[in-house]
Amino acid sequence: MLAVLLAPTTARAAEAERVAAPGDTVALPVRDALAALPVQTENRTGYERTKFRHWTDADHDGCNTRQEVLKTEAVLAPQQGSNCTLTGGQWYSPYDDKYFSDARALDIDHLVPLAEAWDSGASAWTAKEREAYANDLGDARALIAVSAASNRSKSDQDPSTWQPPAPGYRCQYATEWIADKTRWGLTVDPAEHAALTDALTSCADQPVTVTLAR
Image (cartoon, rainbow, N blue to C red):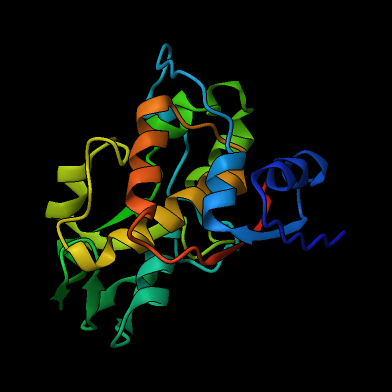
């Protein structure tokens, strides 16, 4: 089922979220998308990174999720050897506005970190749902190749405590964070909501189109 929903008001945005189902596509302005996300306090009780199995090879082509993202996001395609070993190539890390020619200098970041996902709803998911989240190749915004230094600086923080060092990427970061949380039906905490609201004041209220994963 395909449901494309355009909502100019926060009330209609919330209604769109209520009636949509996994596999549906929703489209609405980013500020309305933020307004539609439930605001709840977070709880990290029981979190372990191992509860999100990754990196897997879902299509059994010999390349795991990390390698698939590196191949997709390369600005200069690498050469692929045995066991999907990648050599050469070039990548752009939008977090810090830098180019890299060595895949080993890059991490594949979960835009919404695994711990943050756990805090905001994934603690109630099945193991298979968490695995699907950790290896989400169905939305290009979910996983992103970035410099190891910027990813480790970010760690498991949300936008209330961490922003990309490159100022020119911050509007896109906020928008894609909201899109990812919408896709997976996750909540936001009050500080996170306030930070995203503040970030969007200097950003265009662009439409966000998301295919719901759950």
